[in-house]
Image (cartoon, one colour):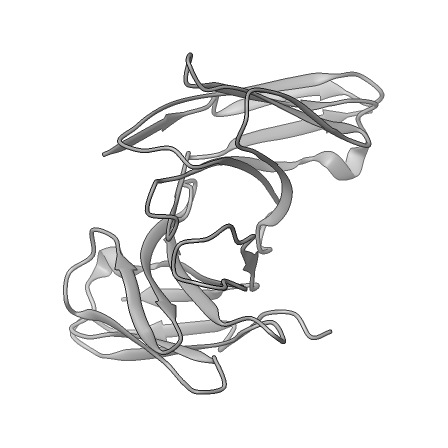
Amino acid sequence: ETGVTQSPTHLIKTRGQQVTLRCSSQSGHNTVSWYQQALGQGPQFIFQYYREEENGRGNFPPRFSGLQFPNYSSELNVNALELDDSALYLCASSLATRPASYNEQFFGPGTRLTVL
Amino acid sequence: GQNIDQPTEMTATEGAIVQINCTYQTSGFNGLFWYQQHAGEAPTFLSYNVLDGLEEKGRFSSFLSRSKGYSYLLLKELQMKDSASYLCAVRDNNDYKLSFGAGTTVTVRA
């Protein structure tokens, strides 16, 4: 069974640029959640996708957007990067039989984004 | 909104017991999770409580009191590899997101 993978591992961007982060879900999982983790803080929920549709969103501006593909892999896009966007971005996959059901989330190793 | 509090740091000796407390005030509740996160790595699932009481899993136990908005994670027979950050997370009624505390960094000393 393949676990959750993310790419790239590290990324350096400058203010105003755009970035795309990628996540491959664990085999058999249909739900992916994205989190932002600043240094020394807990992960903050960005949004979740279930069967290619957004299933909930945290307190992040619209310049944070996402996609989920038919194979359940996912992308997180961030436009107009700001210095405060520097963080570890984690994706977590789970298996849900409907949007609202128990599901343990398995996290990927994360992408470390640095905005200069 | 969600407010989840846990201590910032704890230090304990190898072989000892450490208890990490977590208090929460949330607009909804549908389960509390504990995760372990080593530096530079992904969080890994440790335990899940949705009903009051104690859940035991090997050296790790987790307790929940919903009326008090309180949970703790108990780590027994501490090993050096237990040095990590421990994250308390609450799932709300919508089931789609976890709200995390800032994490407790546990340092195990020989």
